[in-house]
Length: 100
Image (cartoon, rainbow, N blue to C red; front, side, top):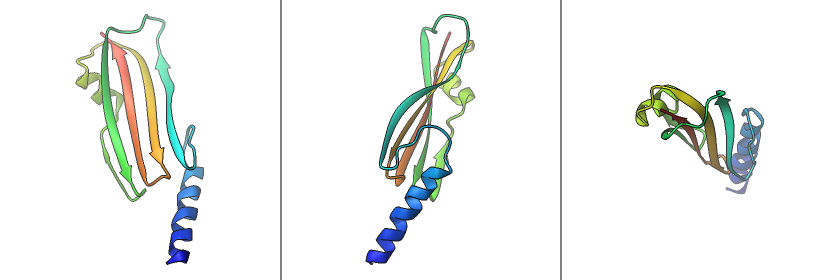
């Protein structure tokens, strides 16, 4: 049992090596910019989420289009990405769009 636990932890840490962006090996909770225009920040906000469980199952639609649709946005001003993860066992990525 101990060997299985060590293997799971090592695989989780190695999975972090292949990811893009700022990722903590144990805990991650960061928001980073993806895109901005020269226009002022929009008055509306829309979000879209994807989740991953155990690094085995991932589901959701965290596209910019989905976030804009969820916020009823037709003119996109900024796009940010929020990443939340605990040990790589549970991860959530949220796309945040502002606009009008």
